[in-house]
Length: 117
Image (cartoon, rainbow, N blue to C red; front, side):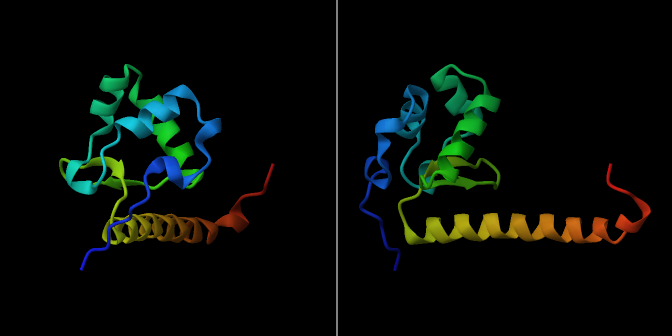
């Protein structure tokens, strides 16, 4: 059984400190993975560039907003509304962290060859 969250983004955090563009992004993101919107489309709808959208979304996620992303073909971003979406997002991020740590560990095997400047 898929559990749905009943809390909207407005209840996630005290949003009185959000900028206008942050509020616009949260208002534009669809609820649920099935309705995910691409970064390109979100940027087009808000009339800002993709890089800025990406940074703002990352900052919102760091602040605790429940924004998921689907990295598969025709994927996109969305507001997390189910427990499955929540755990898929957490697991995807954890895999990325683990992969980056593996790379760091491999690089550090050579650290004796390099001195810090």
